[in-house]
Length: 110
Image (cartoon, rainbow, N blue to C red; front, side, top):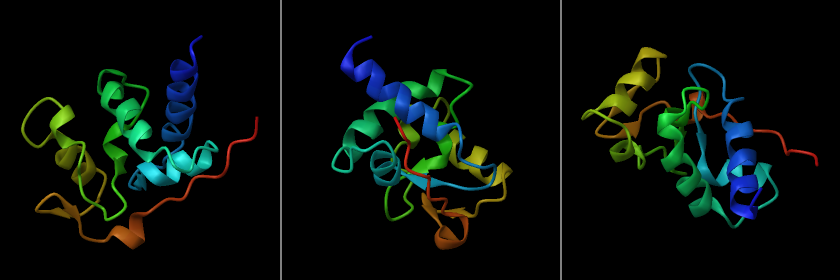
């Protein structure tokens, strides 16, 4: 397995733990897998997760609660619709109750 594939799998492992109705950030996932400065790489991993039903990519947003990955979902507002169906309030691509729904992942151990 290549280094990037291993990195992506760690990202997906954390993303699978995000509870229903909660969100986390690219940076929080990067920190959890021991790559704190790799939030952008987490974003790349999540871009490819849209086709994977086992990874709730719609629950990963930027550090300000903005749906920056929404253009990677099919349909116009699929990311927002998925979040709203879980009770997350979204307005103008921004999560309204961000601090209430923010989930911090635990650090993965090797």
